[in-house]
Amino acid sequence: EKPSARKLEPSFDAGLEEITVTPKVPFKPPLLAGLKSNNYLINCLSGMESYAASKRGCYGIQVDEKGRVGEGAVCSALFVFEQEASSNGASNGTSPDEEVRHLVVATPRFDGTILAGTTAAAALALLNEASMLGASAFDQYLRPGETRVVVVDARQRDVYAAEAKEKAREMIFVAGDYKVHGVVRWDGTAIGQGSVGPVARYLNHALEARMHQGNGVAV
Image 1 (cartoon, rainbow, N blue to C red):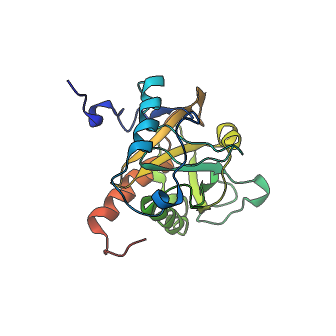
Image 2 (cartoon, rainbow, N blue to C red):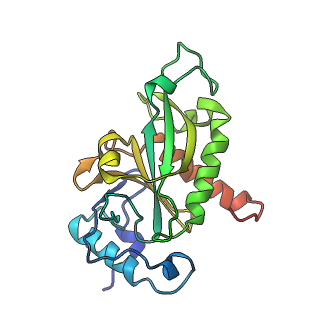
């Protein structure tokens, strides 16, 4: 019996355990990166490699010869980093005495080798809006014992696999149907605390709310 893709996906709270797919899975040519098509062969190859390596993997992730992160099958990748200590301040609705993690979110640039994901663009916009509200925007998504967080910036830039594995607090996949997955392990390395984090939880709620309440304006 053909397995259901939905049943293969771990629950949101469990998170994904993903791998870097092999060079057998090519990056998208500019044509496929720039338009919507029914050619899902590259996506299928990536997903098959990931699931074969880990039954908690579904998408895989591409890394180019320079070590730059690309995308997963049918999803864009976002990475949450802690802001450099010298840049931290008492802005964003926090006081100097509060313990708050100041975070920055990055997603790979749409450079013609990966799909220009509209959900990734929407996620960046939502995170930058949330930054204006300060840590209170994320408080309801904290688990007991977790430190308060505030996202101070969200943008596109080159993200390197080595950097992400060493420094990322969270790794998040977002997909075109407003699906959100926290990636808790990548190539066997725990990301952050090895669990789904508050930024992923926030996006899981905020993107679904945007889908139901959106104003129809494309991002």
